[in-house]
Amino acid sequence: MQYLQRLFTRRRSFWWEYAIAILCYTGVLALCTRLFYFEIKGILEGDLNAQVQVAIGPPGSVGSYVPVYSLYKYVFRFLNWIWPNDWIFVFFELGIVLAGCLVTGRYIHNFSFCKNPALTALFGLGLYCADPIFLPMFNPYRAMGLQAGGLWHNPTLLGIKLLGVVLLWLFARISPQIARQAPGKPLAWFAFAGLIATWIKPNLILCIYPALAVLLLIWLKQAGGRAFWRLAAFAATVLPSMGILLWQYLLTYGESSVQESGIGILFGYSITLFAENPVMSILQSMAFPLAVLAVCWRALKRLDSYCLAWIATGFAYLQYLFLIETGPRMTHGNWDWGVCVMAFLLFVVSFEELLRQMADQWNRNAWGKVWVCCCWGLLGWHVICGVIFLITNLTQGSYFSR
Image (cartoon, rainbow, N blue to C red; front, top):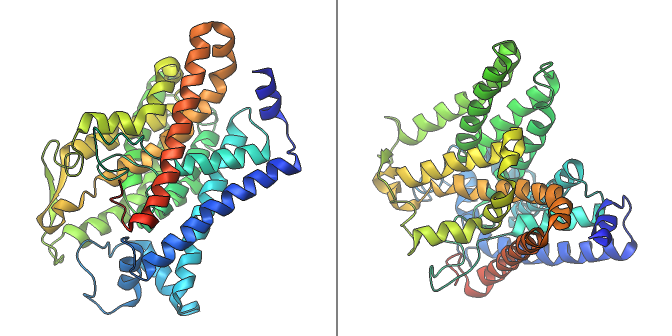
């Protein structure tokens, strides 16, 4: 443990540590390059080609499953204007993936005791790729039917994964100050990041903002009403996103929509759409965060990013378990995206909490050592399953890979 502490706390990395990190990043990005290129060409299943066609193709050229409300529609149209070639969309997606991994690594660097830059970059890559544990005796697919944070076929999910870490970062900056003052710039950036995330795909904000409302009410009660205006300023960051969300709802489900879809309530429909064993699908997807929570549940009382992520994940599962889309979109499983992005963010904050508690638990007793080893083992298993899923996307030509 002392060796690990020295390795983690060292503020400079050796050349061979950077070499390992660069090699791992190169391998994952090479796989992603091939995957995105085959998707844009229509050789592999994926949403990239369809979303690009929404932006640059003739009206009605793709099916009702493609979101016409997304910011990506305008981003792809702009990219096509700059360089009308398939590769520009591949490079854009690679940039989003690389930024997501690096920002995740910097989040770990800033908010944990691990300061080794090459190591935190590797941790960011691993957390970004982590997927549910593959147990085919319970559920036949590696990702579909599970709550997988490491899905690659949907460009908008990759976008909100990046912005989800940005929102966690900003929340971690704002929450310690909000009892004393309302930090203007971080609040403005939080509102802006939330707006962009909503415009790309609304599922993230539909989980984060209800969780934020719960924490704001708790803080208000603890402060006895004295911090009302500061907390109201934090709550007001939701307003820009609500405007975008209302526009998206009217576009998708309003009277002007041609899809004749809506939102309904039907318990268990979404989770049983592709999962043969729904309970095990949750355990396979959340094994590492649940293992960390088993010991670190008292950390929820800090009301920090760890607590926010768990509450948001609870809201994500409520939506996933109870809500459906009616009409032709009913079988698309779009309420799954909330639990997918929250699974990724929950892995990030759970790893942060593991690093915070690791030394104390290791030195406490034998059970603490067992817990640390189990958490690291489960995380490694998740990451290996995620990398294998990325490879099987290519070898089997489908995200329904086994």
